[in-house]
Length: 187
Length: 204
Image (cartoon, rainbow over all chains, first blue to last red; front, side):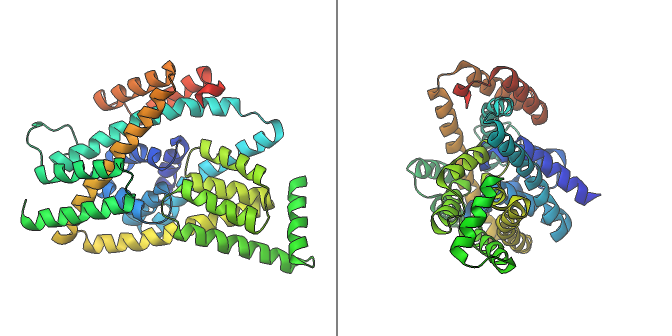
């Protein structure tokens, strides 16, 4: 049953993503793109891009997008509830323990171990994004020299812009505009 | 539960007479304010939490500053979406389970509706060549964001000068990227390492 599967798949993602929005990305990619083939990597990055410009946490947005695309509005609701339920329950339990005993050592320990793991996974997912942007492949490119030059220019400019603390929305809109200009010019 | 009673008194004090009308009013205000904040805040948990705090603490006086700080600290260290965890915890602190549910639905609904509509538009327009050029450009922009986030996270970890987290980063990266080991196994192993070796305050 697709609705249950969506719920549990996103529940699984939710419980292991510690450290904010970006942390859910690699896990979601592994599940939605690699394991279940619900979305292509390109569609997945589009969701990520859209999430940066619309309200709401990226995890919720990606769950809604994937659920909607796979199984319509009810799929969107199931995926989103799946993503929300476990972390909310865990937060409530930990808050109870905290206000009762003032100590959440073991839980904290697990999360302390997961935080650096998530850093590594974000780096790993980021490299996958770079492969798709520059070599148009989801895996390691065969010929590193044969990269897309116009995309490399956009990527380089966007990296500089982000490092200069220009707002995310401006960076994305600017990249989109450059993509359009280069595309129409046939570069 | 003493705190909840205090909050009740606060609400009754500010709202006048006791009774069901007052409770209805509380849930309606909680839902409306949370829904609006969630609907118009772009930029995730670290933007939305101060706004919720301003509403609940400063404007309505439903929570104290100190308990809000504690709740936010817990929400931030838990998995999942920080904004939703925080809103739910604050709702729970104010009114128990009904409060938590109200806050949850109010934070989840706006992105659920927005993204559902966008998905329909995406399905209709994604094949258009003009849209494809724009999306491809934006993919490069999104890739740049991820690269910067990754660099920033690594730099923060290096600054802490702790051996264990850096080893976890390196080993997890190699295992995932070069060896293709499933993320779920890596999370499990790193969680166990954390449970056994990283309970100390310095690691959080």
